[in-house]
Amino acid sequence: MSTHFSFRSARWTALLVVVLALVLALASLLPQGSALSVSPFVVTLCGKYLSYALLALAVDLVWGFAGILTLGHAAFFALGAYGMGMYLTRAIGARGVYGNADLPDFMVFLSWHRLPWYWWGSDHFLVGVVLMLGVPAVLAGLFGWLAFRSRVSGVYLSIITQALTYALMLAFFQNGLGFGGNNGLTGFKDVLGFDLTAPSTRAVLLALTGVILGAVLMGARALMGGRYGRVLVAVRDTESRTRFLGYRPEQVKLVVWIVSALIAALGGALYVLQIGIVNPGEFAPANSIEAVIWVAVGGRGTLTGAVIGAVLVNFGKTLFTAILPEFWLYGLGALFLATTLFLPNGVMGLLRHVPRKRDEEVTPEITNPEGSNA
Amino acid sequence: MTTAALLDLRDVSVSFDGFRAINGLSLTLAPGEMRAIVGPNGAGKTTMMDIITGKTRPDTGSVTFRGHDLTRLDEPAIAELGIGRKFQKPTVFEALSVWDNLLLALKGLRRPHRLLFARLTPDEIRRIEGLLATIRLGAESTRAAGGLSHGQKQWLEIGMLLAQEPDLLLVDEPVAGMTDAETAETAGLLREINRTRSVVVVEHDMDFVRALDVTVTVLHEGAVLAEGPLDTVSNDPRVIEVYLGR
Image 1 (cartoon, rainbow over the protein chains, first blue to last red):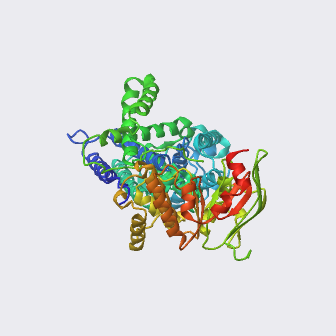
Image 2 (image 1 turned 30 degrees about the vertical axis):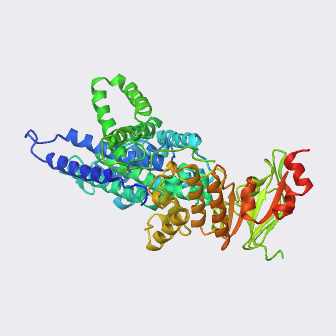
Image 3 (image 1 turned 135 degrees about the horizontal axis):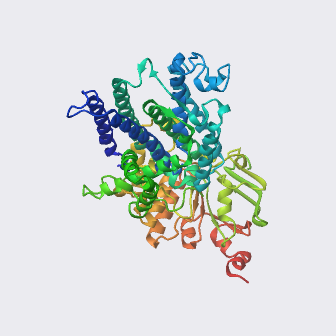
């Protein structure tokens, strides 16, 4: 009856992600050295991949479904990481190098005497959550409202997103901004009273990341498979036409833009919990571009592809940088070129060639005959 | 007279880089009327549609629809007031199925936050199925609109226009690229639509205009050159001159 927007693969992927994360988490609790045990290194690595998968999903929502090629999404990821990092920093309390219960180490080092106002309340976990989600959402809302209202699109929009993350990177490098300058935030001890170095805490965090990723994947599937997703695709392909039907493309895009920023921020928060450090390097333009490559490799506009791409490319990066570190960037570039040239729908496109019932999975592929704007 | 008009364009002018696309155009449409607009290339037909639908703002003059000043509104607001538009080149959502194209066009939900949790209602299903029957695309409802033939796309777009339930339909060259049989069917469809709605049709095809059997307005160089029944208009020496050259 309607376009097949079911993304059935998303359900399986969500299930797989949750199960794998739970199994790995449990296995990491087995005595180290036993046959089935998983090392803390692997747990951290998997947590990182899954956090990145959230960023990739965020990129896929706006790039795959709204046609907005974002080259700055790592900004929302990093802001989420900083938001959680602020809480974690305050949770260190008097256990820091300077033993100051009220001021984080780097502020003592800068001989600050008072906590800046924007750090107020960050010692409460809930305030930390509000900061980690609220700040990226507000920034995305403001940015999107201005950009979409002025009908900035295409490559111009891409450039502005890139400028946004670059500007934030420069700002966060400043010591005076109050976020630890180029060292960023680190040295975390515990979260909600649980020791961050304890295997049990790490196992729970990995499992939690898996469950959140699975839930977000299902949520994104419901959103994109519903009426809103169809309108979004209509806006992506023929924006001017939707206006004559009475839709306001700028509002339609703003919604997905903010949702996407929230997902990226969530990924960043889970990332910092498991990696234990966030610094301005997270804002580097290259990070955002890498996220786009993950989605391209996995398959744009497929949701599942974003998750697969993020895990696959980062796994490759882990291997590659261990074996031939100096060639990783060339490898990544070659991968992107190869994907663009030979696999326009990424790994998902490859999978779809596996014979199955015809016209079963018509995902809203990128059929864009007239460009996204008129 | 003025107050009774559904659509009223008065002394409208607009120029692009010094070129006067519309030059003192006045046109009045009564409720329930169907009007055919003809004119040579560059006469300002499409620009007139752009002005009515809010895509182009006139430099001077007034445009009112049921008392609303259209020059102050943008495209979505005008669409919601009840003016629907079909484009010269059929413009449908190619990645979406025929069914979904109609669904998105259905009068009703437009605000993003409402769309997020929208569910298909039995009423919507009934309306879409009715439309599919009208435009004879019932068998194609699951196909991606991008895969339809040119004529089918034209009809789908007319279906989308109907789905909006507008009071006024602006139809730009609906039979371009259609076979004679399709052209005749389209004329019948438009007459059918005109029973309940007002229609403005821009068309080059004189057989089609004749089949519509309505008042014809001839545009030339952005202004009205002649207006009346097709036979009167086509015998007007000024019209003949414009169409055939000196």
